[in-house]
Image 1 (tube, rainbow, N blue to C red):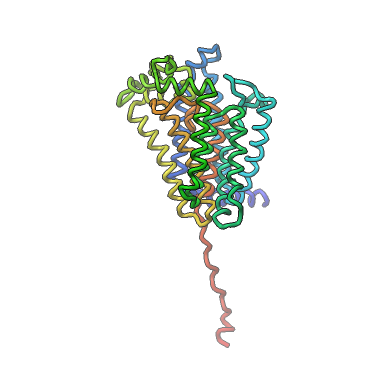
Image 2: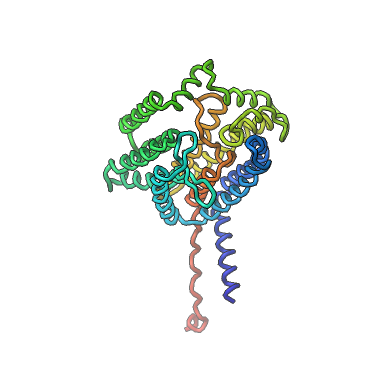
Length: 385
């Protein structure tokens, strides 16, 4: 009897979830993840062979990451808004602790300390900081709009997180987090004057990084002046996209991915565009846009201000990250090691993105209407009396 009640409860929970979830948004996320399964076999085998690993080393690991990501997204989407806020706070605190540990015991890769080794896997705490930071910032701005808090609190939070990221250094995540914060400030009712100071600070920080950090200067200078020879990967990516044409070379028949050192990570879109052509590349861009616009449309219907801001912040970061990666592949901005959500190889980025989109799905669920109670049945004898 207890087992029967257990399964009835679970089935009722899933039924409620299916009827309240935004299905076009959910199916768009599943489609993007499905494309990620395909791209891991298209872009990673050559990279594995180059460094002496088994041919499907990266592909096998990415399949595990994608499966865990989908399970995470589904599990988080079952939560209530209150539970989402509690989860975000816990993730934020753990991410801050991880960022501090990275500076002490993190391993160095290409001059940056961004990863912790846990159970044989490399974890990047800055990826998990983003969803927690955006929801916590949304809660603070909502309280600020209700005049229940000082305006300095969200700014101090941004500065503290940015300093931890710069210490790694991770310029890309710092810029992404700041842009997300500015977006929430504007959406919460902040005037252009309030945006001016942090915006000027971000611009000044970028100039400072260009002048003082050699790897940042090399990327920006190479972008501004290709004759310096610092734009090899970008040139190969553009050649791959051009070689794909409208219909592409076909699955597995890409030529230029053999010359892209980061074909399975930062430049996975170039591989996709070469083998799938303009049709598949344009469809992927449209899929990213659909997820962002659909989530924003659902957020506009939410009653709670903090829910509106949270959804806007989460999908805003998702869209910005995708836009920056695509812009790098198309040589519209200087190169930056930023993954393409659900398509690039990497466990931390994939799981953090799934966590963010699971929160979006949970916060945009429709409320189940409460049916009125049926009127009480009056016994026939009382009616006759």
